[in-house]
Length: 363
Image 1 (spheres, rainbow, N blue to C red):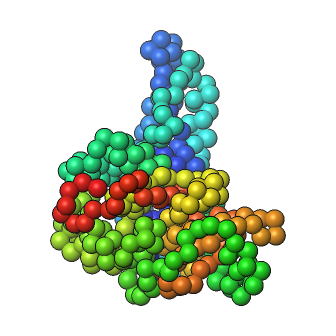
Image 2 (image 1 turned 180 degrees about the horizontal axis):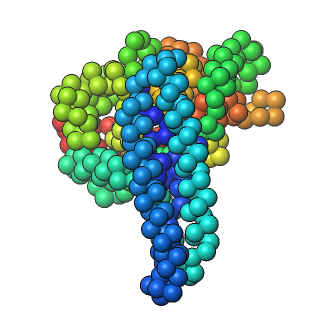
Protein backbone atom coordinates (compact mmCIF):
# COMPACT_ATOMS: atom_id res chain seq x y z
CA UNK A 1 0.00 0.00 0.00
CA UNK A 2 1.02 3.61 -0.33
CA UNK A 3 -0.06 6.44 1.93
CA UNK A 4 -1.93 9.29 0.33
CA UNK A 5 -2.94 12.70 1.65
CA UNK A 6 -6.26 12.90 3.47
CA UNK A 7 -9.20 12.98 1.11
CA UNK A 8 -9.85 16.74 1.24
CA UNK A 9 -6.27 17.69 0.40
CA UNK A 10 -5.57 20.39 -2.17
CA UNK A 11 -9.16 21.25 -2.98
CA UNK A 12 -8.62 24.75 -4.31
CA UNK A 13 -7.59 25.20 -7.90
CA UNK A 14 -7.99 21.71 -9.38
CA UNK A 15 -10.14 18.59 -9.29
CA UNK A 16 -10.66 17.62 -5.68
CA UNK A 17 -10.14 14.06 -4.46
CA UNK A 18 -12.87 14.54 -1.85
CA UNK A 19 -15.77 14.62 -4.31
CA UNK A 20 -14.22 15.04 -7.77
CA UNK A 21 -15.31 18.67 -8.08
CA UNK A 22 -13.18 21.52 -9.35
CA UNK A 23 -13.07 24.93 -7.69
CA UNK A 24 -13.67 27.27 -10.65
CA UNK A 25 -11.28 30.11 -11.26
CA UNK A 26 -12.57 33.62 -10.59
CA UNK A 27 -12.82 35.52 -13.85
CA UNK A 28 -10.91 38.75 -14.20
CA UNK A 29 -12.92 41.98 -14.21
CA UNK A 30 -12.06 44.48 -16.92
CA UNK A 31 -10.89 47.76 -15.42
CA UNK A 32 -13.95 49.52 -16.80
CA UNK A 33 -16.30 47.02 -15.11
CA UNK A 34 -14.51 47.31 -11.78
CA UNK A 35 -14.76 51.10 -11.93
CA UNK A 36 -18.41 51.19 -12.92
CA UNK A 37 -19.56 48.48 -10.47
CA UNK A 38 -17.60 48.65 -7.20
CA UNK A 39 -19.99 46.13 -5.66
CA UNK A 40 -18.97 43.48 -8.18
CA UNK A 41 -15.31 44.20 -7.55
CA UNK A 42 -15.98 43.88 -3.81
CA UNK A 43 -17.63 40.48 -4.33
CA UNK A 44 -14.55 39.27 -6.16
CA UNK A 45 -12.23 40.50 -3.42
CA UNK A 46 -14.37 38.80 -0.76
CA UNK A 47 -14.33 35.51 -2.68
CA UNK A 48 -10.56 35.66 -3.02
CA UNK A 49 -10.23 36.15 0.74
CA UNK A 50 -12.71 33.36 1.41
CA UNK A 51 -10.84 30.83 -0.71
CA UNK A 52 -7.56 31.79 0.95
CA UNK A 53 -9.19 31.08 4.33
CA UNK A 54 -10.59 27.79 3.08
CA UNK A 55 -7.19 26.79 1.76
CA UNK A 56 -5.66 27.39 5.19
CA UNK A 57 -8.43 25.33 6.80
CA UNK A 58 -7.78 22.47 4.38
CA UNK A 59 -4.08 22.50 5.20
CA UNK A 60 -4.78 22.54 8.92
CA UNK A 61 -7.19 19.61 8.60
CA UNK A 62 -4.67 17.65 6.55
CA UNK A 63 -1.97 18.21 9.15
CA UNK A 64 -4.21 17.20 12.04
CA UNK A 65 -5.90 14.20 10.46
CA UNK A 66 -3.32 12.55 8.21
CA UNK A 67 -2.34 9.80 10.67
CA UNK A 68 -5.33 9.36 12.96
CA UNK A 69 -6.20 5.80 13.94
CA UNK A 70 -9.08 4.19 12.08
CA UNK A 71 -12.13 3.86 14.34
CA UNK A 72 -10.84 6.30 16.94
CA UNK A 73 -12.59 9.37 18.35
CA UNK A 74 -10.00 11.46 16.52
CA UNK A 75 -11.08 9.94 13.22
CA UNK A 76 -14.72 10.74 13.99
CA UNK A 77 -13.79 14.33 14.78
CA UNK A 78 -11.78 14.60 11.57
CA UNK A 79 -14.64 13.21 9.49
CA UNK A 80 -17.06 15.69 11.09
CA UNK A 81 -14.74 18.60 10.40
CA UNK A 82 -14.17 17.36 6.88
CA UNK A 83 -17.95 17.26 6.24
CA UNK A 84 -18.29 20.84 7.45
CA UNK A 85 -15.40 21.95 5.27
CA UNK A 86 -16.81 20.16 2.22
CA UNK A 87 -20.12 21.95 2.80
CA UNK A 88 -18.37 25.32 3.03
CA UNK A 89 -16.43 24.61 -0.15
CA UNK A 90 -19.60 23.70 -2.03
CA UNK A 91 -21.17 26.99 -0.95
CA UNK A 92 -18.02 28.76 -2.14
CA UNK A 93 -18.27 27.02 -5.52
CA UNK A 94 -21.87 28.23 -5.89
CA UNK A 95 -20.93 31.80 -4.99
CA UNK A 96 -18.02 31.67 -7.44
CA UNK A 97 -20.26 30.45 -10.26
CA UNK A 98 -22.78 33.20 -9.49
CA UNK A 99 -20.04 35.84 -9.63
CA UNK A 100 -18.59 34.48 -12.87
CA UNK A 101 -22.07 34.55 -14.46
CA UNK A 102 -22.62 38.15 -13.35
CA UNK A 103 -19.22 39.49 -14.41
CA UNK A 104 -19.46 41.40 -17.73
CA UNK A 105 -17.23 40.29 -20.59
CA UNK A 106 -15.47 37.98 -18.21
CA UNK A 107 -13.13 35.42 -19.73
CA UNK A 108 -11.74 32.61 -17.59
CA UNK A 109 -7.97 32.23 -17.65
CA UNK A 110 -6.88 30.26 -20.68
CA UNK A 111 -5.92 26.70 -19.90
CA UNK A 112 -4.80 23.91 -22.16
CA UNK A 113 -6.82 20.69 -21.75
CA UNK A 114 -3.51 18.86 -21.32
CA UNK A 115 -2.47 21.25 -18.55
CA UNK A 116 -5.28 21.68 -16.02
CA UNK A 117 -4.87 24.25 -13.29
CA UNK A 118 -2.81 22.89 -10.41
CA UNK A 119 -2.01 24.20 -6.96
CA UNK A 120 1.46 25.38 -6.00
CA UNK A 121 2.33 22.15 -4.19
CA UNK A 122 1.47 19.98 -7.18
CA UNK A 123 3.40 22.24 -9.53
CA UNK A 124 6.42 22.08 -7.24
CA UNK A 125 6.28 18.27 -7.23
CA UNK A 126 6.01 18.18 -11.04
CA UNK A 127 8.89 20.60 -11.49
CA UNK A 128 11.06 18.64 -9.05
CA UNK A 129 10.39 15.31 -10.77
CA UNK A 130 11.13 16.81 -14.16
CA UNK A 131 14.35 18.31 -12.80
CA UNK A 132 15.47 14.79 -11.87
CA UNK A 133 14.65 13.65 -15.41
CA UNK A 134 16.77 16.44 -16.87
CA UNK A 135 19.68 15.59 -14.59
CA UNK A 136 19.43 12.03 -15.86
CA UNK A 137 19.75 13.28 -19.42
CA UNK A 138 16.20 12.64 -20.64
CA UNK A 139 15.40 14.14 -24.03
CA UNK A 140 12.81 16.85 -24.66
CA UNK A 141 10.21 14.43 -26.07
CA UNK A 142 10.41 12.09 -23.10
CA UNK A 143 10.21 14.97 -20.60
CA UNK A 144 7.21 16.41 -22.48
CA UNK A 145 5.45 13.05 -22.18
CA UNK A 146 6.32 12.88 -18.49
CA UNK A 147 4.88 16.37 -18.01
CA UNK A 148 1.60 15.48 -19.75
CA UNK A 149 1.17 12.40 -17.62
CA UNK A 150 1.96 14.17 -14.35
CA UNK A 151 -0.56 16.93 -15.06
CA UNK A 152 -3.43 14.59 -15.86
CA UNK A 153 -3.12 12.10 -13.01
CA UNK A 154 -6.27 12.94 -11.11
CA UNK A 155 -9.10 11.56 -9.06
CA UNK A 156 -11.27 9.19 -11.10
CA UNK A 157 -13.43 7.15 -8.74
CA UNK A 158 -16.95 7.80 -7.54
CA UNK A 159 -16.36 8.69 -3.87
CA UNK A 160 -17.80 5.44 -2.57
CA UNK A 161 -18.36 4.95 1.13
CA UNK A 162 -16.10 2.74 3.22
CA UNK A 163 -18.76 0.02 3.40
CA UNK A 164 -19.29 0.12 -0.38
CA UNK A 165 -15.55 -0.33 -0.92
CA UNK A 166 -15.40 -3.21 1.56
CA UNK A 167 -18.40 -4.90 -0.05
CA UNK A 168 -16.91 -4.55 -3.55
CA UNK A 169 -13.64 -6.08 -2.38
CA UNK A 170 -15.48 -9.00 -0.78
CA UNK A 171 -17.18 -9.65 -4.10
CA UNK A 172 -13.95 -9.22 -6.07
CA UNK A 173 -12.06 -11.72 -3.92
CA UNK A 174 -14.87 -14.26 -4.33
CA UNK A 175 -15.09 -14.02 -8.13
CA UNK A 176 -12.41 -16.64 -8.79
CA UNK A 177 -14.91 -19.23 -7.57
CA UNK A 178 -16.99 -18.53 -10.69
CA UNK A 179 -15.89 -20.91 -13.49
CA UNK A 180 -17.65 -18.82 -16.17
CA UNK A 181 -15.58 -15.77 -15.24
CA UNK A 182 -12.35 -17.75 -15.31
CA UNK A 183 -13.18 -19.25 -18.70
CA UNK A 184 -14.17 -15.93 -20.30
CA UNK A 185 -11.19 -14.11 -18.78
CA UNK A 186 -8.82 -16.72 -20.23
CA UNK A 187 -9.89 -15.90 -23.78
CA UNK A 188 -8.13 -13.26 -25.82
CA UNK A 189 -4.84 -11.45 -25.26
CA UNK A 190 -3.22 -9.85 -22.26
CA UNK A 191 -0.34 -10.56 -19.91
CA UNK A 192 -0.14 -14.23 -19.01
CA UNK A 193 3.14 -14.55 -17.14
CA UNK A 194 3.50 -15.01 -13.41
CA UNK A 195 3.78 -11.92 -11.27
CA UNK A 196 6.94 -10.60 -9.66
CA UNK A 197 6.12 -12.15 -6.30
CA UNK A 198 3.86 -11.74 -3.29
CA UNK A 199 3.76 -8.62 -1.15
CA UNK A 200 4.35 -9.33 2.53
CA UNK A 201 4.32 -6.77 5.32
CA UNK A 202 5.71 -3.84 3.33
CA UNK A 203 3.91 -1.09 1.40
CA UNK A 204 5.79 -1.75 -1.83
CA UNK A 205 2.78 -2.65 -3.98
CA UNK A 206 3.78 0.00 -6.55
CA UNK A 207 7.12 -1.72 -7.09
CA UNK A 208 5.36 -5.05 -7.67
CA UNK A 209 2.85 -3.46 -10.05
CA UNK A 210 5.57 -1.73 -12.05
CA UNK A 211 7.66 -4.89 -12.20
CA UNK A 212 4.66 -6.81 -13.50
CA UNK A 213 3.85 -4.12 -16.08
CA UNK A 214 7.42 -3.95 -17.40
CA UNK A 215 8.08 -7.68 -17.11
CA UNK A 216 11.14 -6.99 -14.96
CA UNK A 217 12.43 -8.59 -11.74
CA UNK A 218 11.26 -6.96 -8.54
CA UNK A 219 14.84 -6.10 -7.55
CA UNK A 220 15.51 -4.09 -10.72
CA UNK A 221 12.44 -1.91 -10.20
CA UNK A 222 13.04 -1.58 -6.45
CA UNK A 223 16.59 -0.38 -7.06
CA UNK A 224 15.41 2.30 -9.47
CA UNK A 225 12.65 3.36 -7.07
CA UNK A 226 15.12 3.83 -4.21
CA UNK A 227 17.36 5.80 -6.58
CA UNK A 228 14.45 8.11 -7.40
CA UNK A 229 13.53 8.65 -3.74
CA UNK A 230 17.17 9.39 -2.95
CA UNK A 231 17.25 12.12 -5.60
CA UNK A 232 13.84 13.63 -4.88
CA UNK A 233 13.96 16.99 -3.14
CA UNK A 234 10.16 16.69 -2.69
CA UNK A 235 10.98 14.11 -0.01
CA UNK A 236 12.32 14.90 3.45
CA UNK A 237 16.01 14.52 4.23
CA UNK A 238 15.20 11.48 6.38
CA UNK A 239 13.29 9.83 3.52
CA UNK A 240 16.05 10.55 1.00
CA UNK A 241 18.65 9.10 3.35
CA UNK A 242 16.65 5.89 3.83
CA UNK A 243 14.80 5.41 0.51
CA UNK A 244 14.16 1.68 0.89
CA UNK A 245 12.53 2.19 4.28
CA UNK A 246 10.53 5.08 2.81
CA UNK A 247 9.09 2.80 0.12
CA UNK A 248 8.40 -0.02 2.56
CA UNK A 249 6.58 2.17 5.07
CA UNK A 250 4.78 4.69 2.85
CA UNK A 251 5.10 3.52 -0.75
CA UNK A 252 5.37 5.78 -3.79
CA UNK A 253 3.15 8.76 -4.54
CA UNK A 254 1.28 9.12 -7.82
CA UNK A 255 3.90 11.37 -9.40
CA UNK A 256 6.64 8.89 -8.57
CA UNK A 257 4.63 6.06 -10.14
CA UNK A 258 4.36 8.06 -13.38
CA UNK A 259 8.09 8.85 -13.29
CA UNK A 260 8.97 5.19 -12.77
CA UNK A 261 6.69 4.04 -15.59
CA UNK A 262 8.29 6.57 -17.93
CA UNK A 263 11.72 5.47 -16.72
CA UNK A 264 11.17 1.92 -17.94
CA UNK A 265 9.13 2.79 -21.01
CA UNK A 266 6.26 5.07 -21.89
CA UNK A 267 3.55 6.28 -19.46
CA UNK A 268 0.16 7.61 -20.49
CA UNK A 269 -2.57 8.61 -18.05
CA UNK A 270 -5.93 7.24 -19.18
CA UNK A 271 -9.49 7.46 -17.87
CA UNK A 272 -11.63 4.38 -17.33
CA UNK A 273 -13.66 5.14 -20.47
CA UNK A 274 -10.49 4.39 -22.47
CA UNK A 275 -9.30 1.33 -20.52
CA UNK A 276 -10.80 -1.18 -22.95
CA UNK A 277 -9.11 0.35 -26.00
CA UNK A 278 -5.76 0.66 -24.25
CA UNK A 279 -5.81 -2.91 -22.96
CA UNK A 280 -6.75 -4.16 -26.43
CA UNK A 281 -3.43 -2.67 -27.60
CA UNK A 282 -1.60 -4.96 -25.16
CA UNK A 283 -0.76 -2.13 -22.75
CA UNK A 284 -1.30 -2.93 -19.05
CA UNK A 285 -2.65 -0.19 -16.80
CA UNK A 286 -1.39 0.69 -13.31
CA UNK A 287 -4.19 1.90 -11.06
CA UNK A 288 -4.34 3.16 -7.48
CA UNK A 289 -7.32 1.72 -5.61
CA UNK A 290 -8.77 1.97 -2.13
CA UNK A 291 -7.65 -1.01 -0.02
CA UNK A 292 -10.03 -3.81 1.01
CA UNK A 293 -10.52 -2.30 4.48
CA UNK A 294 -12.08 0.79 2.86
CA UNK A 295 -9.62 3.23 4.48
CA UNK A 296 -9.61 6.11 1.99
CA UNK A 297 -6.48 7.61 3.55
CA UNK A 298 -4.47 4.74 2.11
CA UNK A 299 -3.99 3.48 -1.42
CA UNK A 300 -2.98 0.22 -3.04
CA UNK A 301 -1.45 -0.17 -6.53
CA UNK A 302 -2.61 -2.98 -8.80
CA UNK A 303 -2.12 -3.79 -12.49
CA UNK A 304 -4.98 -4.32 -14.95
CA UNK A 305 -3.78 -6.68 -17.67
CA UNK A 306 -6.79 -7.37 -19.88
CA UNK A 307 -10.52 -6.87 -20.34
CA UNK A 308 -13.38 -9.16 -21.29
CA UNK A 309 -17.17 -9.21 -21.47
CA UNK A 310 -19.35 -11.10 -19.01
CA UNK A 311 -23.14 -10.94 -18.73
CA UNK A 312 -23.19 -7.88 -20.97
CA UNK A 313 -20.77 -5.88 -18.81
CA UNK A 314 -17.09 -4.95 -19.10
CA UNK A 315 -14.79 -6.83 -16.73
CA UNK A 316 -11.06 -6.63 -16.00
CA UNK A 317 -8.31 -9.07 -15.07
CA UNK A 318 -6.11 -7.67 -12.31
CA UNK A 319 -2.69 -8.63 -10.91
CA UNK A 320 -2.53 -7.78 -7.21
CA UNK A 321 0.69 -8.30 -5.27
CA UNK A 322 -1.35 -9.02 -2.13
CA UNK A 323 -2.63 -12.16 -3.84
CA UNK A 324 0.69 -13.66 -4.91
CA UNK A 325 2.29 -14.14 -8.34
CA UNK A 326 -0.23 -16.55 -9.90
CA UNK A 327 -3.72 -15.57 -8.72
CA UNK A 328 -5.70 -13.15 -10.87
CA UNK A 329 -8.61 -11.04 -9.66
CA UNK A 330 -11.70 -10.27 -11.73
CA UNK A 331 -13.37 -6.86 -11.37
CA UNK A 332 -16.52 -5.64 -13.06
CA UNK A 333 -16.60 -2.06 -14.34
CA UNK A 334 -18.83 -1.07 -11.43
CA UNK A 335 -16.53 -2.66 -8.88
CA UNK A 336 -13.50 -0.94 -10.37
CA UNK A 337 -15.26 2.43 -10.29
CA UNK A 338 -16.11 1.84 -6.63
CA UNK A 339 -12.56 1.10 -5.46
CA UNK A 340 -10.67 3.39 -7.88
CA UNK A 341 -8.67 6.34 -6.52
CA UNK A 342 -6.96 7.85 -9.59
CA UNK A 343 -6.88 7.68 -13.35
CA UNK A 344 -4.84 4.79 -14.69
CA UNK A 345 -1.24 4.88 -15.94
CA UNK A 346 -0.95 2.86 -19.14
CA UNK A 347 2.48 1.39 -19.76
CA UNK A 348 4.32 0.28 -22.87
CA UNK A 349 8.03 -0.30 -23.40
CA UNK A 350 9.92 2.16 -25.56
CA UNK A 351 10.34 0.81 -29.06
CA UNK A 352 13.74 -0.74 -29.82
CA UNK A 353 15.03 -0.01 -26.31
CA UNK A 354 15.55 -1.84 -23.06
CA UNK A 355 15.52 -0.27 -19.59
CA UNK A 356 18.93 0.96 -18.52
CA UNK A 357 20.61 -0.43 -15.44
CA UNK A 358 21.65 1.80 -12.56
CA UNK A 359 24.31 4.35 -13.37
CA UNK A 360 24.44 3.75 -17.13
CA UNK A 361 22.99 7.01 -18.40
CA UNK A 362 19.64 8.13 -19.71
CA UNK A 363 16.83 5.66 -20.35
